[in-house]
Length: 211
Image (tube, rainbow, N blue to C red; front, side, top):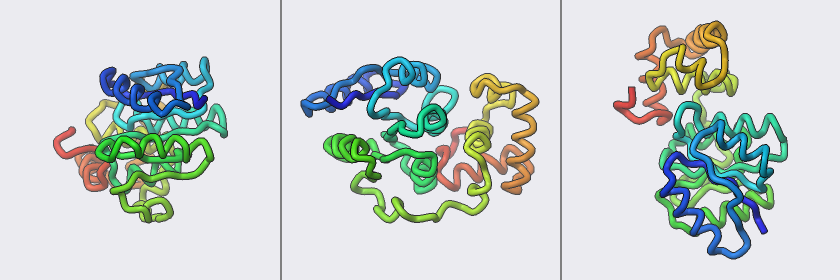
């Protein structure tokens, strides 16, 4: 039996795809979570075979969850299941160690296929998304310079969160956030918060009008 952890901030969505996955007969959902911290605690407690997470979560994102799980265990298998499916996000998820990226607009069977692929430690990209994204390195060179922590701080700041809120969400000191903010601006060549937001929007990291 494949043991799954589902992470999405909408309980109805979690219930829906729990039903879908468990219908397959060889999967069981051992825990559900609506935030990164809750998901991390369940991962530690239940040690699921695969964690399926959305990108957009309250506070810290699913990308940060992938990073935290991989830091805890190099064998952690994760899938992203999200309506946000830009090339930048797909590439970043794979870079952080995700084994699959499934768009919420795809056929339900794709999520089941992704689980079996992840169990075999094979990468999976749902039909409808350009399959060359699995192998491309088309990420903007500037983003390649950001560490996973810097990327998460960038994402939070670009969507309008204050440095103090970033510190709270990521469990870091305000001084650390301030230092990271300076490093990010230098690496990306963005002198203002508006410039950071524009860059994030242009690469599909946040939707227009999010800030």
